[in-house]
Length: 169
Length: 147
Image 1: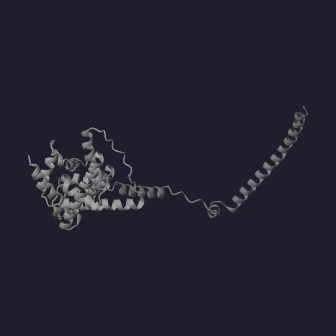
Image 2: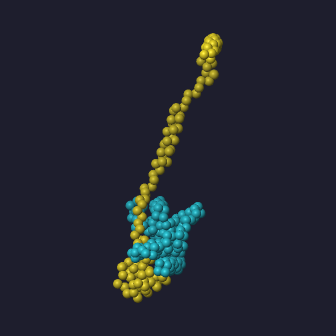
Image 3: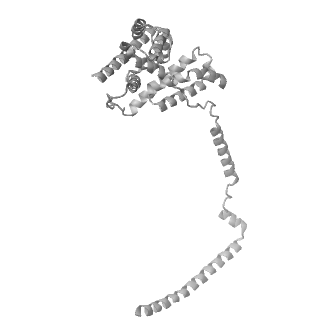
């Protein structure tokens, strides 16, 4: 496979790899590094790539595994920084700011989800993959994907509602 | 525009994870607009966030050209040059005493040794005489300390 051919295959989904990596690793820089690493790994496999029937799903799986490994080694090496004291929300903010704020809150809520739910939510609600595709990427049963997804969505809703009622009360 | 009733139904399906991709798309478009029914407004941030999260792009350039092993070859070349250089500049072996014997006759060596011995003797004589200068220095020092 030539470089141009490879780029044609990879370019359409490189952003998806990056977004998944960022969802898992949180930091943009780390996600960029991870994506780069994945793309280079893919490129080094370009000879056998034609035999994969779904390069995109394969790359997503690679990203998932890579990031989870990263996280695991990081947890083993570093103390985890826990933000338990977010700045108190100002109740007098303008409504527009508040709306923007709660959109950001969804991101923060997602950061706290377990990895699997994070990934399922990312792949379904952000990237809009089919359940079968997600099942393939994450190496799960399609029913398990549904269950995880439903749970994740409800959790996000619950936290969001909690957050809103704090604002009112 | 979808009716609120329809949206509520879709939301229910959404949270049970039984909605299709198309139905979820409907929800996203509904919540991306300005006017959302007040009792549904609490869900808006979710869908707005998912939409905005999709905007993120990977902008870093990836150097795909496999790194040619220039360094590998350069190091091999450097090692070769070094070896050749060392071989060429190998210092000539010092002439060993055997060579000295071969180069000169015993008489020549003997006379050379004699000459060197004489040189040493005369040099010693000279330095012995120089020691008188020390005496001179002592006396001048005496004068200087007296003052």
